[in-house]
Amino acid sequence: MVTHEFLTSLPQFLILIPATASCYFTVYNQMKYPPLKTAALCLFVLIPYSFLGSWIAVSFCLDINTILLLSLVPFFFLYRQTVSVDLARCLAIYVGVCAIETFPAQLAYSFDAFLHPAAGAADFSIEAVFFQLGLSCIIAAAFAYPAIHWFAPMVKRLSFPKIWYSTVFLSSIFLLFNILAVPQSYHTLHTGRLSYLFPILECCALLLLVMIYVLFYQGAIVFLEHAALKERSQLLEMQSHQYQTIREHIRQTSRLRHDFRHSIRLLSSLAVQGDIDSIRSHLAEYETSLIESETPDYCGSATLNALFGHYHQRAVSAGIKTIWNITLPEQLHAAECDMASLLGNLMENAIDGCLTVPEESRYFCLTIEITNGNQLYVVSTNSFNGKCRKEKDTYRSTKHEGKGIGLISIAAIAEKYNGSVQISNSDREFFVDVVLSPTSELV
Image (cartoon, rainbow, N blue to C red; front, top):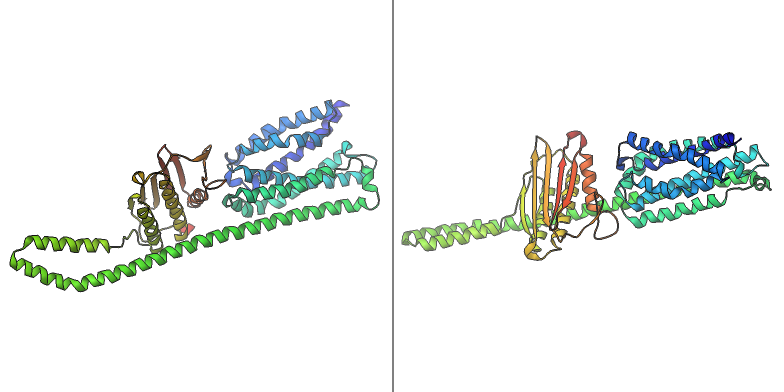
């Protein structure tokens, strides 16, 4: 009898398989381990847990739902150890999946009540178990494509904890509602119209939750697009400023060319007089005026040149010693907007770091060059006060809760171009090394 009860309760834990898989759909590109290794780790935990949970349920006459509910907390911490996302996003995904998975359970209760009207939730039949498992697998399969192709990139880009915690609150409402709505006795489902209203209400609630997730996704995309437009607007402002600087340079050089004939006459007169000191003085003054009017030309791209000019001016104005060695060809196999985003975030973070130390200690070294044919190599070193927020190998923003948006953007662009990012720091310096391997197909 005990063996029969054990074998009957064991399949109820199979629901953990589609639920676990669903938790990884939206973070498949942020898992700490390869998919096969992650799957093996999950099975290594879930299989012994299922046998242990079945034994506890039979030995102590406990409800399996109670065991599963109490296991949500340790399972969450185990889940978080396998993904590289912050607490807010990890919790939002986990609670969201748990909320979705309660709907197949509720519909399975309705199905079980139809088969066994005199029973209750404590007498969950084996037919209802596999009915629930089938629904869970169907829902997981239906959500797999949109979760991987649409939600996963959004999850990676959106790093505002307050937004993610709001989804935790909404998902928790549906989760608690379904937990409280578990019919302890199936007689209640046969009262009045509940036999068919209950599954209809559950389907409507599931549809409502899905619509909330879709609206959240659309809102997040609009938010991210607005941020991208703001970044482009800032870049256009930099280009406009660079254009004005070039116009001023042209005006000044035009005046110098106009005055050059007077300088020739003066130098000729001084040479006749043999006044070498005056000639030297005049030439030095003329050379200084040329240097002051010169506009730095960092590379062949007008967009990137404007970007470098903007941040170089910011650095100089802040008293930051700049040691820049930039060697870029006119044609890059990387999209100009991606390069502007990567370099802009890198330079802005470096300048912000320099501002945390006294002016006499501020310096920013930047090297950008092409190596091994088409590999783009970027090395940045800047002074800072040594204070940073770090969680394992991930740097978090010192301006707000969550990861630094600039570093996330840099990492995303490096990944897009088959590259890598290495970030480290000492007590006084912050280091960022970026390697990109762009190909023409990626542009």
